[in-house]
Image 1 (tube, rainbow, N blue to C red):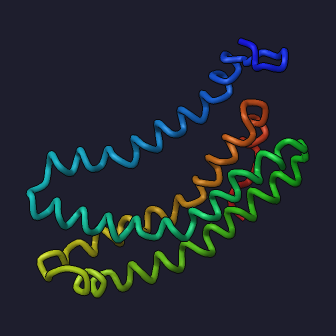
Image 2: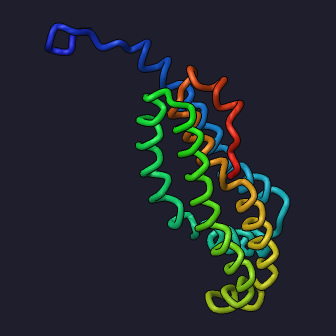
Image 3: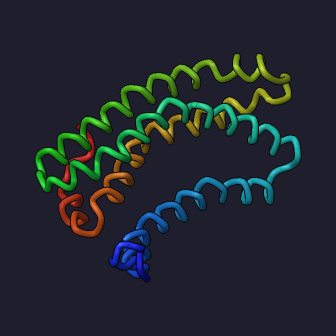
Length: 171
């Protein structure tokens, strides 16, 4: 299909190179929402409200890592374009270090104060939600580096998958 300058728009290439991103978004979206379907099926209405309040508090910390993720999402493809493995390792490692350094302390503080936060924004009936908040923050703190790994996989494309398997993700 002509692009107005005599060239062609390559639909197949667009689909081929966007497939890993599509798969990543599909998995990420599924992971974000599958818990709600499961919880809705098994819990009572009060327990569902407690879970939703806990989830709302837990996901509020995304504002800490979202700006960094946005910058890294645009920086890593440039670094991968240089094909300098040492530079790729260094930047991925530093990005993970920044994520952990910012997210972990805040997640720990919010977990420790979760009962007070719940009492401040809701009623005493929701107090048992602090356990959910603690579980979510502990788990997310352990896997926060997966955001950088996902961006690395998207940035590097298929060419660098074998290289990424040899990188050390944790500083």
